[in-house]
Image (cartoon, rainbow, N blue to C red; front, side, top):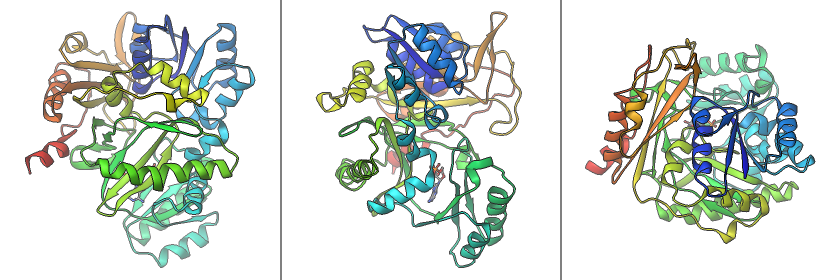
Length: 426
Ligand code: AMP
C-alpha cells in the first residue's frame, strides 16, 4: 500500500514510523514531512493547508490511504474533499471536526448531553463579556472560539486581566476570526489526562492514557506551548474512571453528534481534568495529540494500519489493541525562544549516537537537511522517547539520550514525568 501522512511535526513522524512497520505498507509519503520522515519514506513539498494540491497529488499518485495529522486541514474540510474524489482518508469531516474547531459548538453539545465540563457562557459582544466578568469568582478561563495554534486559552487571575484579554480577543483581533466569539468558563482544579479513542461513528477503541506538559518551563511555569513532553500511562487514570468515561462522556458525545446529523470517524482525544469527583472535559480534539502520539505509539504492539481502516469502515468493534506493558516518556527539545520568536537553521549534532541507545526512539519535528546537514527548522525540534519497566527507568533513558543531542539555543524541560515518580515514592 501507498500511504500519505499529512503534516510535518513529531506526531506525523511517529504516525509514519508506526504505519511503515505494517507488512502491507510498501511506500510511505509525507507532506511536507521533516528530516525524520524523509529517512523512512519520501517527503512531498506540499504544505498541510494546501488542500487542492494535496487532493491532486493523492489522486495522481494513486495513494491508497491518507492520514491527516494536524487540526487545521481537518477544520478546513480536507476529508470532505478527499471523499468527494473517492480517496480513502483517515480523519473526521469538516462538520465533525467542529468538536475541536469551535469551542462554542463543543460546549453547547456538552451542555445538551449533560457531559461533565466547566460551567461556561459564550459571548459575541465584548461589553456583555465585561459585565459578566464583574460578577465572577477568579481565576476564570477565557477561550477564543476557533483554532488559535493552542494559544487561544487564557487563564485570567483577576477582573483587570479578564478585561484586557477580552479586549485583545474580541476588539483587537489578536486571534483573527478565531477570537470574535469567546467562551468564559469556570477554572477547574485537578490533574490533566489525555485519552485517545479511535471512533468509527458508532463504537470506539480506547488507546493507552497519557499526560502531557503544556507549559514551557520546569514546575509548570511560563507560557503554554504545543507540548514539551509526555508520559504514558497517565498516573492519574484509574480503571474505575473508564466506566464513567464511557457512560458520561463518550456515549453522550456520540449521541449528541448523531442528533446533529454528524458521524464522527477518526481520532477523538478528549482532554480531561481529573479531580476527586471524577473526570470533566476540558476540550475535545479531533486528531492525534502532539506529543502524546510520540509517547503512545511506541507502546502499541498491534498493527495500526488495519485499525485506522476499521475506523474508516465503521468496524472498530472487531478489533482489540495489544500494548507493551512498559512505560514511555517523551522529552521535547525546542529552539531557544520557543514558544515565542526563535531562529532556525542551527546544526544538530549527537543524534546518531543518541538514536543507537537501546529502548530509545527519536522523532523529528522541526528538522530538515540543508546541504546534507541536519538543521533545526521549527519551534519544537525533536521528541525523544524511551521505554522502561517503570516511568523512572523510561525517564532516565530519555534524558540520557537527550544529553547527547546538541544544537545552539536548545531548551527542554528537566521535570517531564517527575510528578509520576514523586507519586510512587509517596
Ligand atoms: P484547551 O485548549 O481548552 O484544552 O485549553 C488548554 C489548556 O488550558 C488545558 O490543557 C488546561 O491546562 C487549561 N484549561 C483549559 N480550560 C480550563 C479550565 N476550565 N480550568 C482550568 N484549566 C483549563
